[in-house]
Length: 101
Image (cartoon, rainbow, N blue to C red; front, side, top):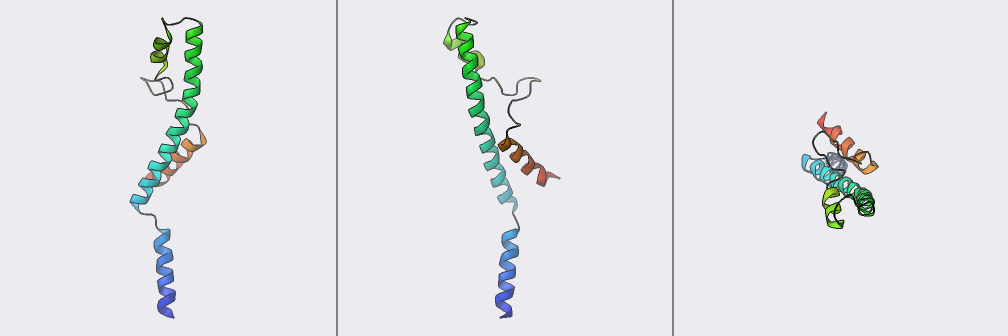
Protein backbone atom coordinates (compact mmCIF):
# COMPACT_ATOMS: atom_id res chain seq x y z
CA UNK A 1 0.00 0.00 0.00
CA UNK A 2 2.77 2.43 0.91
CA UNK A 3 4.56 1.62 -2.33
CA UNK A 4 1.45 2.44 -4.36
CA UNK A 5 1.03 5.82 -2.64
CA UNK A 6 4.74 6.59 -3.05
CA UNK A 7 4.58 5.67 -6.73
CA UNK A 8 1.54 7.88 -7.23
CA UNK A 9 3.23 10.82 -5.51
CA UNK A 10 6.41 10.35 -7.50
CA UNK A 11 4.55 10.21 -10.82
CA UNK A 12 2.52 13.32 -9.93
CA UNK A 13 5.64 15.30 -9.05
CA UNK A 14 7.40 14.04 -12.16
CA UNK A 15 4.54 15.21 -14.37
CA UNK A 16 4.41 18.62 -12.70
CA UNK A 17 8.06 19.37 -13.39
CA UNK A 18 8.55 20.84 -16.82
CA UNK A 19 11.86 19.98 -18.42
CA UNK A 20 14.02 22.42 -20.34
CA UNK A 21 13.13 20.57 -23.55
CA UNK A 22 9.42 20.92 -22.74
CA UNK A 23 9.79 24.67 -22.19
CA UNK A 24 11.74 25.11 -25.42
CA UNK A 25 9.18 23.10 -27.36
CA UNK A 26 6.33 25.13 -25.86
CA UNK A 27 8.20 28.37 -26.62
CA UNK A 28 8.72 27.31 -30.22
CA UNK A 29 5.02 26.47 -30.50
CA UNK A 30 3.97 29.84 -29.04
CA UNK A 31 6.44 31.72 -31.23
CA UNK A 32 5.11 29.93 -34.30
CA UNK A 33 1.51 30.79 -33.43
CA UNK A 34 2.51 34.42 -32.82
CA UNK A 35 4.28 34.66 -36.16
CA UNK A 36 1.37 33.06 -37.98
CA UNK A 37 -1.08 35.54 -36.45
CA UNK A 38 1.25 38.46 -37.25
CA UNK A 39 1.64 37.37 -40.87
CA UNK A 40 -2.14 37.01 -41.29
CA UNK A 41 -2.66 40.55 -40.06
CA UNK A 42 0.28 41.92 -42.06
CA UNK A 43 -1.01 40.26 -45.24
CA UNK A 44 -4.25 42.22 -44.96
CA UNK A 45 -2.43 45.50 -44.37
CA UNK A 46 0.07 44.84 -47.15
CA UNK A 47 -2.70 43.98 -49.60
CA UNK A 48 -4.40 47.28 -48.85
CA UNK A 49 -1.16 49.20 -49.29
CA UNK A 50 -0.47 47.46 -52.60
CA UNK A 51 -3.96 48.30 -53.86
CA UNK A 52 -3.53 51.92 -52.84
CA UNK A 53 -0.12 51.99 -54.53
CA UNK A 54 -1.61 50.61 -57.76
CA UNK A 55 -4.63 52.94 -57.72
CA UNK A 56 -2.52 56.02 -57.06
CA UNK A 57 0.19 54.84 -59.49
CA UNK A 58 2.88 55.29 -56.84
CA UNK A 59 5.04 52.68 -58.62
CA UNK A 60 5.25 51.66 -62.28
CA UNK A 61 3.10 48.52 -61.89
CA UNK A 62 1.53 46.05 -59.42
CA UNK A 63 4.71 43.95 -59.23
CA UNK A 64 6.71 47.02 -58.20
CA UNK A 65 4.12 47.87 -55.54
CA UNK A 66 4.25 44.30 -54.21
CA UNK A 67 8.05 44.38 -54.05
CA UNK A 68 7.96 47.73 -52.26
CA UNK A 69 5.58 46.50 -49.56
CA UNK A 70 6.75 42.87 -49.29
CA UNK A 71 8.50 43.45 -45.95
CA UNK A 72 6.14 46.07 -44.57
CA UNK A 73 5.62 45.52 -40.86
CA UNK A 74 8.87 43.66 -40.29
CA UNK A 75 11.74 45.14 -38.31
CA UNK A 76 13.91 47.28 -40.54
CA UNK A 77 16.61 49.61 -39.28
CA UNK A 78 15.24 51.38 -36.22
CA UNK A 79 11.62 50.64 -37.21
CA UNK A 80 10.09 48.08 -34.86
CA UNK A 81 8.10 45.15 -36.21
CA UNK A 82 4.33 45.48 -36.09
CA UNK A 83 1.70 43.41 -34.31
CA UNK A 84 3.77 41.93 -31.51
CA UNK A 85 0.96 43.23 -29.31
CA UNK A 86 -1.42 40.52 -30.54
CA UNK A 87 -2.60 38.19 -27.75
CA UNK A 88 -0.68 35.20 -29.17
CA UNK A 89 2.53 37.24 -29.22
CA UNK A 90 2.00 38.57 -25.72
CA UNK A 91 1.52 34.98 -24.53
CA UNK A 92 4.76 33.92 -26.24
CA UNK A 93 6.62 36.85 -24.68
CA UNK A 94 5.23 36.14 -21.21
CA UNK A 95 6.17 32.47 -21.49
CA UNK A 96 9.71 33.38 -22.49
CA UNK A 97 10.00 35.95 -19.74
CA UNK A 98 8.71 33.46 -17.13
CA UNK A 99 11.79 31.28 -17.37
CA UNK A 100 14.43 33.86 -18.19
CA UNK A 101 14.15 35.52 -14.80
